[in-house]
Amino acid sequence: MDERVKRIKTAELCEIFATNAAKRGRPDLAQEAKVRAIELRAEEYGAQTAAENEAIQAVYAYEEVLSKKNGKRTRASRTWQMIKRRGIINSVERAVNRRSETQGYTALAEMGLKEFAFEAVILRHPQLFSDEAIAISKQRLRDWQTPDENKEQAIPEGLYSALQGREEISNAQSLFSNRMVEGCDRVEEMNLGFQGGGLAATVHWSSDLDLWMALQGVEKRYWNAFGLGNPFESGSKSIVVEINSPYEGINRRVGGVFLQDDNEGLYLGHRGGVGGGRPGIGKDAFLDTSKPEQLMDFQDGDRVSEALFIGALDATDFPECVAAFVHQVGKFKEGV
Image (tube, rainbow, N blue to C red; front, top):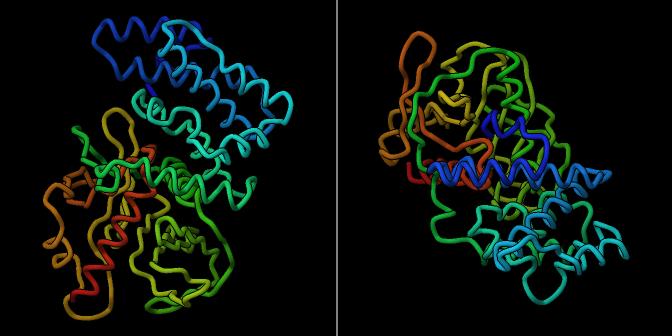
């Protein structure tokens, strides 16, 4: 989010900023101001937990849909009444369990606000909702996806450089980890083996992505291991690829790299070394099978290097982009 938008302190000022930005040909800033207004209104409401705050944001986002439809500021009166009677979380559960889709998802998507759908809130906080609500939410989000939403992200234009500072890499790793585990169905401790050793790890499993992951710090790097299939039922614990990162500095022997553009946007890339321990599986062979549009150049300390672009850490579909990369590696290894 642009620093000018972050500094706005009231929803009303956000609306003025959005109107002026749109008039000056900056729809991107107008959109950010709309999102900032939603965040500020939710903060003013005073929810007690992160999940409740996101649910309140969803209601204010729906009011944006109603206001656009009616041509004037419109309250979601029925939703607020239900929240008053039943509480925030119970109201989200009840709304999603209705037969019809909730909160005008198509309209939210058209306004760039689809992350504020109640269904999306439920999948970010599944521990608070019933199995039925979770299943309905998953199905609706699958039904609502456009064909392009399952493809790799396009690489934004700009100059990229590898993060090197210990604090900035730590912050990027935290964001990476949080984005990946937020929609997982199950988490357990288990032993994972890899070439040259093994360790006890906290393993998360996502049925939607058909992906398991172990994301933790070990010795001199962040160890981000990914595999396919349900490790708790199928016994499939083979690591398909690691997207590791050093704690600080440049380490070209690990696969993962956090990147920053000239607007301070954060991205995840992979150097192409996918391991495997057998002939034919290596960096050059894997890069040769990758699509040209996946490859990007970046400033890698004292040189320019090439990496596969995985996705923007703050993108709505970032977990899907990571999963697409892991599945791509899996298919490459199967074909060798």
